[in-house]
Image 1 (cartoon, rainbow, N blue to C red):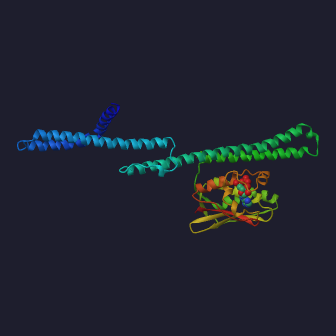
Image 2 (image 1 turned 90 degrees about the horizontal axis):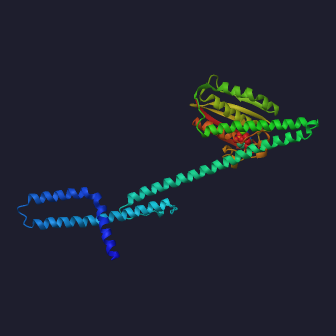
Image 3 (image 1 turned 180 degrees about the horizontal axis):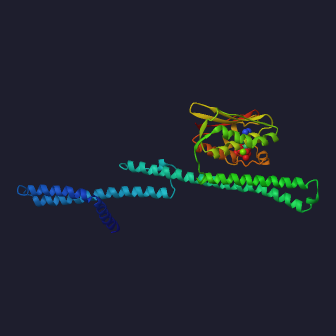
Length: 348
Ligand SMILES: Nc1ncnc2c1ncn2[C@@H]1O[C@H](COP(=O)(O)OP(=O)(O)O)[C@@H](O)[C@H]1O
Ligand SMILES: [Mg+2]
């Protein structure tokens, strides 16, 4: 009884499902009707023919409906499985014969969704890591400032041997804090796409002589020679002068910070269609295994050293972004113990 009901039910479902094909059937049947009409006099078994056409129609409807339902069920099952995360890779997605194009389309969608999710998860991890780093970096100078001020308040202020020294150190840490905040603001502008570039032609020699003037004292204080090798007079390059100044200042500061003796050179070399700008030092250098990592945010080869000289670990990340916005890239040539050269090309 129950199976009887199921069979009838399935029969009706299949017929109803086949209704999407009614247009095709209508056309065929109109054709039949025309034939029957044309030969209406010569065909004696006309009623039988009409009956046969109707029965054939119903049978065809039934099979087509059944096939369609089976295929739809298969597709529904696959979609449900994807939604419930039952597949680990696209090879597990299989549809019956005749559905290859849908199988391919679903696999493509699966791949896209998987890579989107992977990307989102990776971004999420990067974000949390970044936030953890920021908090840690902020905590270090703030704790130091707190420590010096508390010690001073607790009496050290009257101790002539340490009071100036502690104030000096607290001041150094406020400078670190302010450097960090400035770099963070830059990074966040870069992230949000708010860092607007304004490109135009400018004289590269005037930029490097400005950077030279601004940093001469810092180099002299460390007994280092800061030198420039300019290009031909009035050589123009194309870029955002102000952002490129920031790049050069960062590179020159690094060169000064990571060099104990010798010299730092800012060099411009003219080539056929571009100009190569380099900052070269005779400092501690970078071993090969670190060369790719120094552009990561907060990455420093020697954390304690960088921090003690006011580094934030964000400088090269900002440099990389600005240079890439100029459709160029930063090239590092360095040997541990010998020195480093950071260079990039600009259109002229
Ligand atoms: N000229 C250089 N010589 C040696 N090491 C360098 C030089 N420039 C950068 N580095 C290394 O790359 C790291 C990242 O640089 P950067 O992003 O500017 O951060 P920081 O604030 O530490 O200077 C530095 O901590 C240092 O270890
Ligand atoms: Mg730096």
